[in-house]
Image 1 (tube, rainbow over the protein chains, first blue to last red):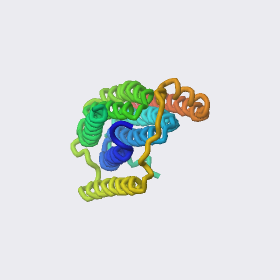
Image 2 (image 1 turned 90 degrees about the vertical axis):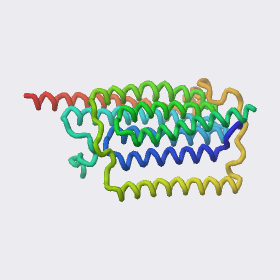
Image 3 (image 1 turned 60 degrees about the vertical axis):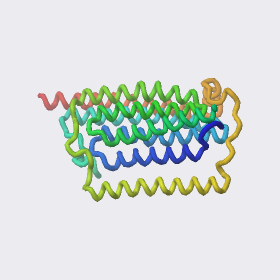
Image 4 (image 1 turned 180 degrees about the vertical axis):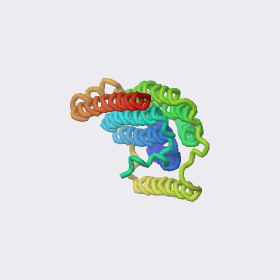
Length: 102
Length: 180
């Protein structure tokens, strides 16, 4: 394997995942939260593909493609919710959206 | 020489990846956040190419950088300017707590990786042939060993499409009720 070994990829993926998790936990706008979830999913994808290269099996890449499809579905539903909120002129702030709480 | 070039490309892509991820989290305007997420996805595709995942890299650019991000930009443009006065939720103590938690998680992971490396678990990467990660071999795996995952993925996409339509029509009904 030319270039960096697997541990470089693991550390990069950890940093990306932490960045996405910070965005999910600390931002108010649901749009930015969805974008940060995408970053977290992509960090997991990077790790899946790196380990699939390490072991020489393509199963990790299959898993990564499935994760991509799930992420696309999640974006559809999330953006649908955000558009529904925007049409009712609700302020887009997850701290103020309390009515869905159990 | 080839090795040096791979390292240069890797560091460029990794740096772009991290900087654009930080930009996504810190920009006030969601439009700029979405644009920097496109940069993040593109640099991740470069890393996938370095790991000889050609098909996944192409899918990343087409599906994520193309379709999903265009949908994001449409919705952001539809909602209009929603730049936030105070984008961070919680007080300063929560932000410090979040930063400490994220830093601790990264530190744990680094320690585990260093330990595994010292134990020799991650040292040898297997030899692969030229067709590794090509559309043909990935497609063959999808339709033989992973047929169930393939079918489940199609059902998930169908459910998401129906959910999107239902959410959209429900919102329109609420809007017309509010007008009447």
